[in-house]
Image (cartoon, rainbow, N blue to C red; front, side):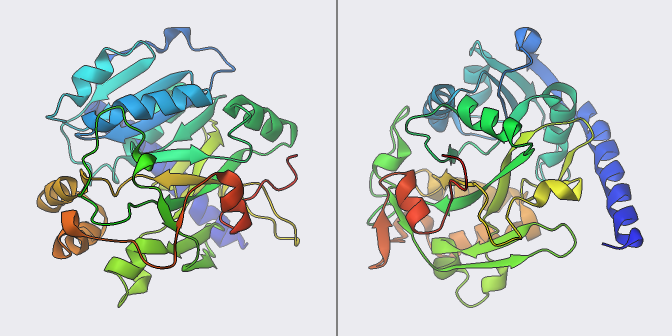
Length: 336
């Protein structure tokens, strides 16, 4: 990498960090309970709006994995999300009514919280509909993974976003609060993915899956990115450059093996397509706060979200992480 490119990325990192500091003044603390967080604790950071029905299962899932404390930014929810989170003993909560889009889709807010509270910790950064799956997650807690990463001097861990969906119309079966969303949204595309490498940031760029074939078949280059780096041993010098798709410094994006081997990686099971999907798509279509003038939500709106059926004859029912590894969607690498 040339000196000019290195300099550009260094300036970009300083710019994003300064921007996060400026955007921190948009946040108002509603409840702060992180005073007893210990050095070895695993933390989770998340931005949300109107996700009340999802929160009980989300918190239960990540508590069971081994997350010790949660940091949430509530972007002006009107469904009781903030009130629910404010009552949780392991949650610190901030509120903002400012523009999600102008905060770079929430990542400026999270970069600030990560810098202030995440330094020295293993931090998960996920959305309320993303559920982290890693090698041996059925028998080993998240602490076992982070201990191995520490022992291997690995600072970041990648995960492919895997869209999950039901068999039949997305809105056919009601989702009950506290329910495991993958009881119904238990199907996925085992193929239909493209991978390229971002030459500037060095990360892999993955697209495809059901959203690509259902909404972007005629313009696949506009399909949502599925590459994520959700788990990082955070340092206050770091920042996310574009959602959780890529980080700075650039070396944190090298989560693949360039020497013919295979680095360990995970999957984020994406529970977007449950019966709340149509209403959420309509709300976000009206707000126009998402990437590229909400072109993704416009595509959902055009396809009449609730009656949408993503299942096809190539769909496969989810069983466990080993199945995902067999299909090449994740890897245990040399972690045995």
